[in-house]
Length: 219
Image (cartoon, rainbow, N blue to C red; front, top):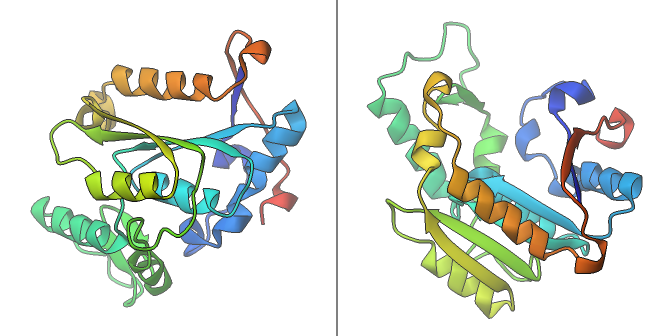
């Protein structure tokens, strides 16, 4: 198998206000490019925290997602916004600089515009799930916090084959960059899950390269 990745900087696409939560059906363009470029017919999405929620929501609108790996997933946007605000206060971070937009809230260095906060508030993976996002999902919870039992139960009700694990490594992964420790157990679990989604007859040694995609299909 060949694993490819693309970076936003390589795409030379400017980050716009509220861009991180723009319509998710348009977020699928990079995946479609990857599939066309490499002849892939199976796509496995992986996301951490809010990225896991966005991957799940995006997958509900697609038919070519073979699996999703959700790492320390955010299942409620409202709860996540409260968590960011509390952490912002607990760390005693400086307020937004003078001249900043009054309607924009800062959360750990990220600007949350009003429309972004509304979009976050609308995310509820337990109550809002109405269709199966993928045939199979791997949910990796932190080993120091309660598991995502309600969401896992909802996924199973929707017919998803759920693999669940509580693994160490998340906290050391998100500390200051010079202290970061790669979460070996989490990475191994995600790679193994993705490998099981590929037909055995087409399995090849894994290589990792970058894919540069045309920006015209991403805007």
